[in-house]
Image 1 (cartoon, rainbow, N blue to C red):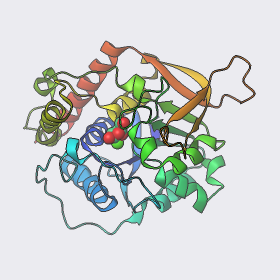
Image 2: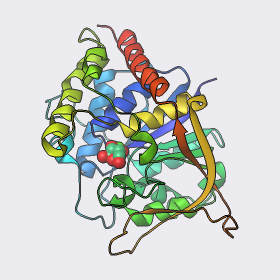
Image 3: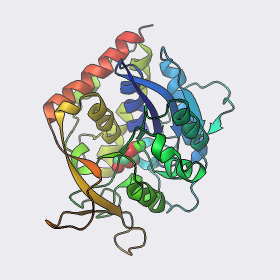
Amino acid sequence: MARKVIIDCDPGIDDAVALTLALFDPRLEVVAVTAVAGNVSAEQATRNVQTIVEQLDPPRYPRLGSATEPDSAPYIDRRHLNGEDGLAGAGLAVSQLARQHPSEKLICDEVRAAPGEVTLVCLGPLTNVARALTRDPELLSLLGRIVIMGGSVSGVGNVTPCAEFNIYFDPPSARTIFRSPTTKTLVPLDVTDQVVLSLELLNQLPDETSRAGRLLRAIVPHLFRTHRHELGQESIRLSDTVAIAAMLHPELFHTTELSGDVETSGELTLGATIFDRRPNSPQRADIEVTTELDVPAVTDCIVRGLADAGRQTAI
Ligand code: BDR
Ligand code: CA
């Protein structure tokens, strides 16, 4: 039976590829896609979620949730990598924006509709999830699991020396989730970064005779260009897509239970994730953390999954 998931995301090209992988895989039933501010503003993230789902037009249409800005966020986004609109400035068509429920309400509604069955997959900052738990504290006992792409176990970040973007964008919300007694899995940056995708990926994307191919070919090349110009890199990493691969193929990943927390006030360490690995730690290890993966096999799964999305969306 397909696993019910809500995907909370801040598209972003990486998020768009991750959604393409998730929406056509028979192992997942994506009941909702909820937008959160991060790579782009709340308004743009809301628009982008609708754009991506409309462009892909999957067989089971998920409900869509709208983002609102976080209470206080550091001024940071990722438009220099993803384009002004977060989707490569590709001018993708979208119908008039549908009236949507706020993401945190939709999360509450969908979890309550299937108690214990829903996995919440977080591919952006944790603002919506923290708000959902504030709105409905009983959600804690009704959620199946939370899977989070974010943080770093080695301590090496991507927006500061020690902080990863999704956590750094809204550290108080991240701390709320890390400290909550939910069943959690973390897929951190130091694991997702091991999947390095070369320009070869562009030849492996589905072709433009499919809706998935059209979308991916309109946005992924932009990420290679900005990685070269902004970061001096010839290859890209797709952290959110690796996180979806971890859900689809857990046998390719190794996890370990750790106790973790988030720094919310450090002058140099704001947004860092801290893991207690002392042998006799008094803290209870309560986060399942992905620590290793089979890089060639995960890469292959991503390429095959996207090709399958192409076959399912042939025009
Ligand atoms: C994360 O940051 C965002 O820019 C990506 O979409 C991904 O979720 C990686 O640090
Ligand atoms: Ca993201």
